[in-house]
Amino acid sequence: MELPEGFKKKCSEAKSVVFFTGAGISAESGIPTFRGEDGLWRKFRAEEIASLDALYNNTKEFFEFYRERFLSLRDKLPNPGHYAISEMESVFPDVSVITQNIDGLHRKAGSKQVFEIHGSIFYEYCQTCRYRQRVPDERDEEVPRCPECGGLLRPDVVLFGEAMHEPDWSKAYTAASSADIFFSVGTSALVYPAASLPFVALERGAYIVEVNLTDTPLSRYANLVLHGKSGEILPELVRAAKEIMGRL
Ligand code: BJW
Ligand code: ZN
Image: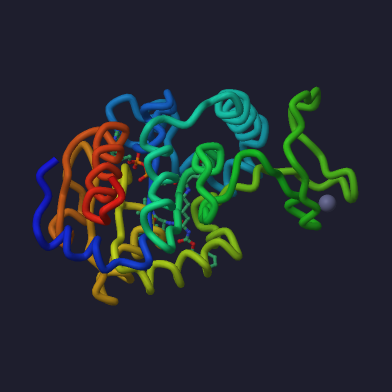
């Protein structure tokens, strides 16, 4: 892969590298994206189902939707894009992964420093008393109830109108504001405040690389835009970074 000199220079000096990922990185693991061609939200409107309004007023449908998501995400496996990011830990001294995904695939691929700013499908907590537990594999009730207080036991994911997952968000913000290179991978860069992170990095002087099938609102601010599948481009970037760092 032919890469610009500016990128090579940044690579050779970089200490902190951040990968900011969205649904696109998991597309090649067979997980539908939200807003793409076969986007999940073509069938379900995101703002309608991923909302507190749905939790309270469309409770059965809300839990049915998230139970199905849990069951389908549970067995999914990382793809070469996830593995390439975890391999970057052997190239750069400090690698952070900030993900909007709730699928747990970066950890499955071996990445150590992962901030899940929109939460995780594998946990649930009580809307009333905040009791938290892992989602059980077997479940009979359609609407799960808290063993402590009987409140709604909802998925530990960030619904529209809710604050980002903590402490992940604070750590993600800190990582973005000290990044030397910031890769934005497979995200439409439309959902805030997540989409503000590349701009936090940009302000700090980070070199911004975007990997996506198409342009996004971030593209015109990025130093380097690579169009294509992340499962193909990221492994090439690992090879290039290793070469630049003299590890091949
Ligand atoms: C590939 C590929 C391949 C495909 N290789 N690439 C107006 C302006 C600004 C903000 C707002 C506004 N109106 C409302 C808001 C706020 C709102 C918001 O941003 N809305 C926008 C839609 C306008 N944000 C919120 O409500 C957030 N909370 C908030 O603001 O709180 C305020 C607050 C503060 C303090 C206290 C209390 C409150 C919360 C946002 C929560 C988002 N939640 C979801 C659902 C999570 C749970 C679940 O999964 O069910 O998160 S929505 C959904 O979108 C999900 C994703 O993480 C998120 C981002 O989507 P992503 O990952 O970018 O996916 P796609 O599908 O959009 O894009 C995929 C991309 O991949 C595409 O570009 C493809 O081209 C590419 N691609 N295959 C490379 N192989
Ligand atoms: Zn409770």
